[in-house]
Length: 74
Image 1 (tube, rainbow, N blue to C red):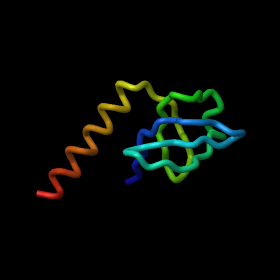
Image 2: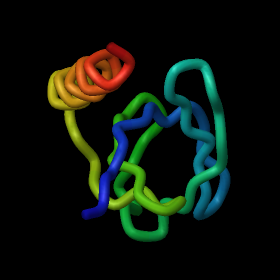
Image 3: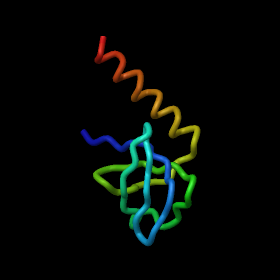
Image 4: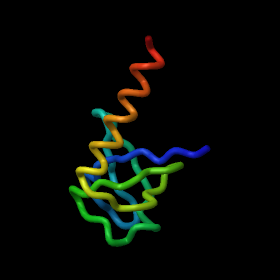
């Protein structure tokens, strides 16, 4: 099973973007999503942005991840 994580695009330079989740930034390839813009949310999988998603979908997915993490901690 593979997971893709919603991340926020903070900046773009060429075919890479700086993305952020939970205060952690990293570089990601946007070669598969050339339409992406700063401020968009993308699904990140193995260092590649694989799909642009809207903020509502991103927030719902992040909340589900938080709920799963909390249930594992209990």
